[in-house]
Length: 402
Image (cartoon, rainbow, N blue to C red; front, side, top):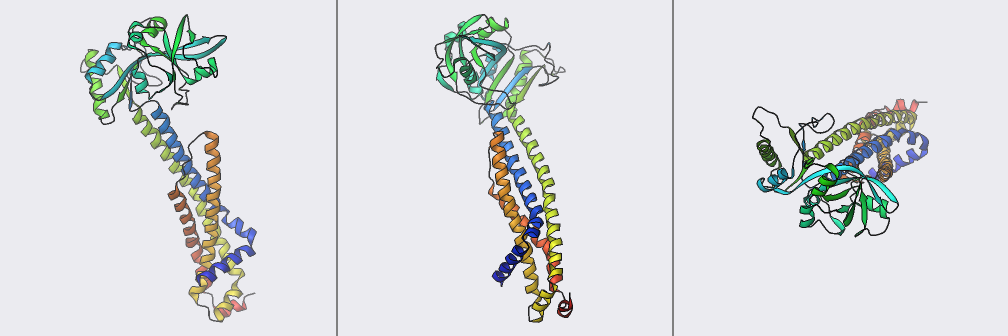
């Protein structure tokens, strides 16, 4: 009985192919939109998390001023020194690495080429806090760090723009008014969490940058990497307590520095993306309801057109539940076909958009299965009323219908 009803449903759909296509169009758009929004949202969430994690492993960034970002009160705020970083490394348990850093924009010159980049004066701890690895060369030696030698480690973008495919290890680049020997090459990372090119940088010893670029012993920021087993919030509290003591801040005085946890930023951004994805998915789901109403409408039309056929079937002994099942299966087949077409459309759209935007493509079988089952359920819900109307027709009145 089920197989016969399914075959009859396919025949009826094929008999009115254009009408059936227009009927399921709402289901196709609804399923496609929902799956596309959720898939792209998951990809965006993963991309944000990866880009934030590329900044460093459990990274804490301490800067002068009470706030970070636009409007931060950094102007005139008491800066840090290398001794602050040393105190944090020695007295705060749970920190894997501490790196003081100063950064300045510069124009680099090598042979007849020049490139605008940024120089970061720091220590070897910078490589640990930022999850950096060396593609070639070596780190700074203890003598180079203590004496402030003119050596540097360059990023992939700097290598590509100034040296092309040539291995730059051992060559020199000019930074403002002094030459710097290249001793290492950073492994490429690509774009960062804020859309900046992470490979467009040059690292040199902190003392070298202070002498040759900034002209002072001040440190712009201190980067700290927290051990995986440590309690980040407790460590942040210990850092603030130590820095307040070193800065001689009274109890009633606010901190004149700020500590940023990149993991909290990643969680906040990911939560925002998930919320927006849910809202867009809910809006797209309205198309499913519109498609369900379209199926109900076309099934009512079909019942009216096939009134005599229904009367004949009832007159020769067909049961009401058989007629009900016939029209219900027809509605479910329509909506299920729309669901399958919507999934195919969503897959193509997601693949194209992720490839275009450089986002990860996350195929979630559960989301696709739920979307298909929901589309089939739409057929059951909105197809029941027309099917029930067909099953309750009086055979005599149905046979008299013109």
